[in-house]
Image 1: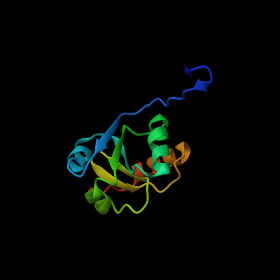
Image 2: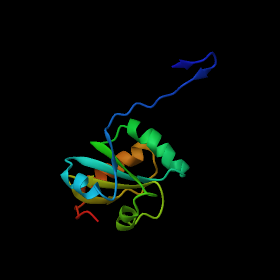
Image 3: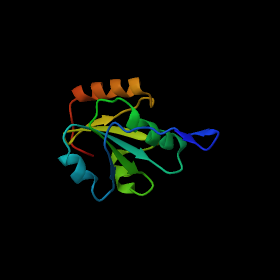
Image 4: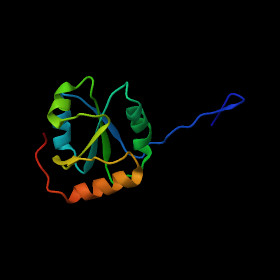
Amino acid sequence: MMVGPHFFLSIEVSSVPSLELTDLDADRQLLALEGVSLLVFTSEGCASCRWARRHLPAMDLPIERLCWVDAGRNGGLVERYGVFHLPALFMVRDGRFHGALNVPLHQEALRGAVLAGSTALPEELP
């Protein structure tokens, strides 16, 4: 899209729905959601988190939704999930916890991790 005489605006198009979760509603939401949710902990001051916010929604991933958690405002979730770095990604499928995704924020690495996580034995949410 052209903006002004010399500037171009690039807009990422989201292919999956996104939810914002908090300490107050995360458990209820995650337990009720069907399919694969990618739970992503971010923070406003984190450059990698801003990159993830911008690019993850446009990636072709085998998920039904992205669930975002602001780590700075939701310390209870940060503690329960054992978040030590940001962004931190976790997989939840049909209300069951399938673990952390410790891979680079690249489409193919994330696709592989989600597919592998789908075959792992699920646990209760932290």
